[in-house]
Image (cartoon, rainbow, N blue to C red):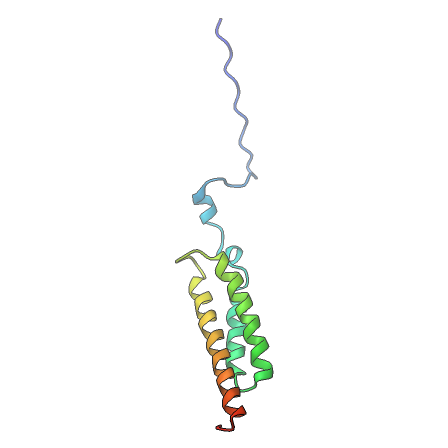
Length: 109
């Protein structure tokens, strides 16, 4: 008589997907936390760039969210453009604020 073949366990319907293709289908919101917040804070910092006491904290907050979201996005992935836009806007707001503050301190402006 032949030995019986071992039974394979049944696949559970609620099991997490294990393939790379299944992981790629994860929504962008779950892969890039804070990208929208980074963009919003960057725009607020740009709007408030003539008031250094408001722009500097908002710009630093935007940079923090941007760095966090930048680490979680892949190159060319969803949300990467928004993160790069937030980075450029927040850096521009901080540079404009620092330039205006230095010009005001030198009494040129």
